[in-house]
Image (cartoon, rainbow, N blue to C red; front, side, top):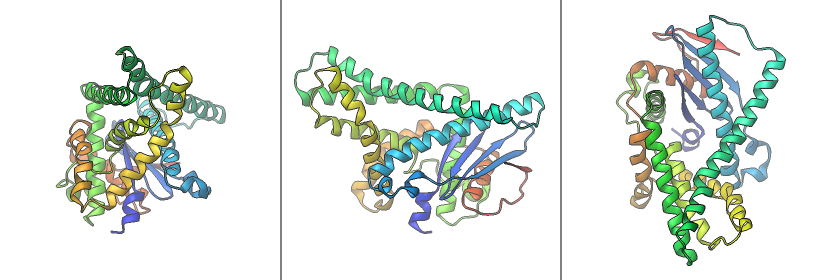
Length: 310
């Protein structure tokens, strides 16, 4: 399989479903309470393909980070809509005004999520480190990075204890197994994917861990923040950190034959022991439906009926 095709396919676990992002399409497949699968396959052209300047290294990573958050929220809303529709026994579509309100609500959700993430993982460590009274810029940024990493790992572990999140992590594992089957030219069936591991080097979990490490290196160049303005400047560098992290994980996917690169991605694979769980065949079936759609292939009928929605 060609490398660029492998890199174009990405996935994300959602409640009782999986989202797969292909080159020009986003597929969302959700398992209904009655056992059927609902599939929504919509065209999606990344903004980096429309504006060449945004497709430059570092820039593209920052943009795709925002796009992934947007698509993730959209997928969660779709999954929730299907669950509510089944619960209420309705099949009607939302009106234009309701769709407009949904778009506004989604935008507010994304902005709130970004603000909360930056406040918790970037601003809070600054405050805690400042309380420790470090004078050296090098020591300050190192401790700041350690606190940020501890908060991140604690957050991942605590949410993994929730029953609902454990279910999401099973679909996360199904998504990884499905992509492995595709990358290794195996049949896109539950049986073809089941032998593969749930640990994938291009996982979003690995990406976030790299973000935490890269942030330490970037902030080392900014010295110790003395004023509020200095702290805000550091926060303004978050898109740069995301862009650099994207380039690193993209490079690591192409250079895994080198021992140093394999060592670099190993911590991310270890962390996936928390963020992925072993899925069952029904969960892999959902992931396969989304993957086939993302690849532009015909969604073949399987044990479960598939319902297409616009």
